[in-house]
Image (cartoon, rainbow, N blue to C red):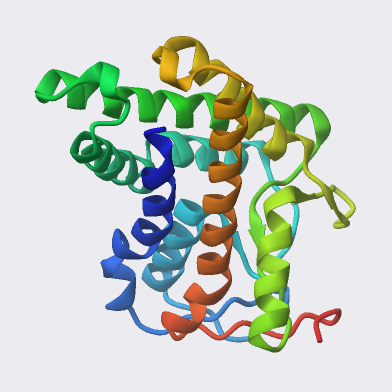
Length: 237
């Protein structure tokens, strides 16, 4: 299916499309209530933009998600730089692989692939957004605050299927999982015959989960690459 490559590209682009962040002064994930030194507005704005684009939250930050913030994150997940660039690159790879073969080659075929990729992501994010409101789930990525590569990686992979509740507890994310499964099923309706059937739907959902897990690993370690140390999580070890 055409999704096999472009979902993984989203993970790479999550880092590649944010080169400006690397040129900014170092910043730290801190609890505003615990900070005694105010940071320059520009640094705060830059940190806020990077984190919102990737749906990231530091371990010591306040966990409450306002509906305004939730909607902004939703808009970025549908029409932000990561999905727009990622789906464009994915459509190019699918064009090169001639997948699906029913669409052939040429600019029109590329447009169909790109449009289908954007539609899939839009449906997935919309389902997740609506369900997260109804179920009071916070689907942002919360940094672990743990020590060790394996502990942090394991936490990032598990976070693919979890969300935060209003009380701060982490539990199974019905909205995120439902978004992937729902979008995979709906995409098989508008796609060609080679996309249809239970096996293809399951394959697409599995690829999406795998790509999201890889993106979560990027989210966990990206602050290290940006020289933005995280404070310790009291529960981390």
